Image (cartoon, rainbow, N blue to C red; front, side, top):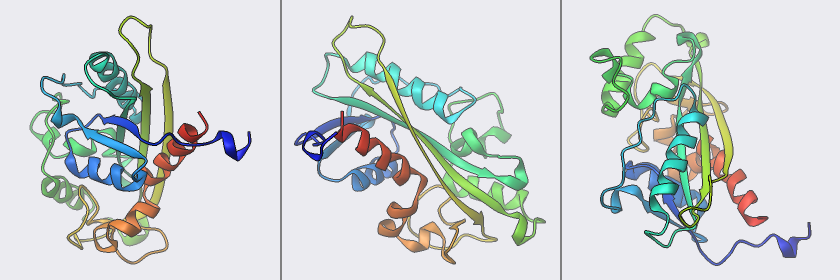
Length: 225
């Protein structure tokens, strides 16, 4: 395929299937001005999609497809983008994984798949579980899967799902460091660095992160669609 046929349209309108404004802002920053990212929070009566799949891909697919069906005919949007991502810690057998956002809340109600925890509580629980784990055994990674679904007219059949993934390897520090980012960023030190994601800042994180890698693949796919 020639370069002339791989051109991104002037603006692609995306519904970002999350109410986490930090995540929406990060996605918008990484994708740039060729995309307009609309937060789910701006749409009234949007359905709550329960993220009860056992994998990142399953949760991302469920959110994207359900919201694409709901939004069809209601707004001028080209695609629904759903991200499911989390932290996998080797010493914890891959936890918190798909439960990353509700890691601490699971202590009170393990069956509740809807109640997220404050970042500080999730970080505190992670440090508590790793308190006796030495530095060399604190390896971890952020893993992201993005599902992209084209918004089609009602009754046009099941939407097709495109999946894009990314990972960022690193380790978990012994205490939070830095004031930037969100989630587990103050504890996560990417390989090749001595600073946490929260210390490195947005520009550096958006070059390294699991989400940046997945979005780069998405951008290439859209540009050649």
